[in-house]
Amino acid sequence: MTSGLVEAIEAISLSMCGLAVILWMSIGTFSRSTRGEVFAQRTIATLCVTAALLLTVFNFMGGELWGSGNVALPMALVAVVVAISASMNLKGKDVQGETNPHQIMKMRKEER
Image (cartoon, rainbow, N blue to C red; front, side, top):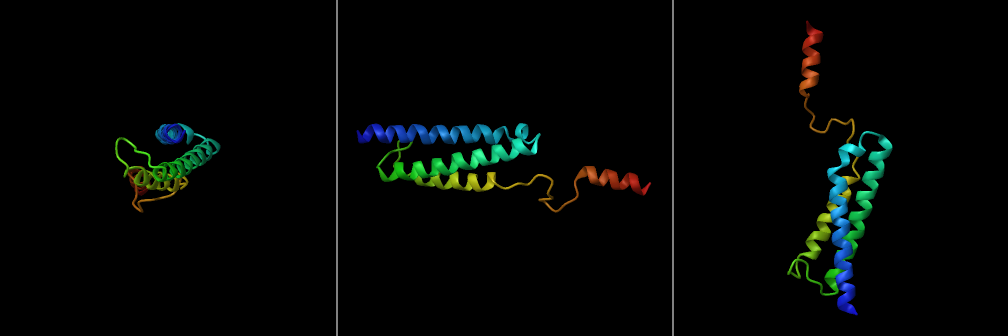
């Protein structure tokens, strides 16, 4: 019974991580509308936090992920970091603090 539960938790957590990665790669498509972007961000964050919890439970149940008993907790931490980064809304904000090439060209045209 316990080994079946451990295998189920492993499959569910890895599936959630995989789905979160697919959504992460598709964020450009979801960003075409604000509503879609918010939905994708919340879905990714929820999937990652749930996967992190499942991976923690999986580790304490003695499960081995990819043949190692030490991988589940670091992967849970990575999932939490991805959840935090997915919930950050950077649309329209200057993150780098530098002028981008489009703004430079626009400023040069205005000077002429």
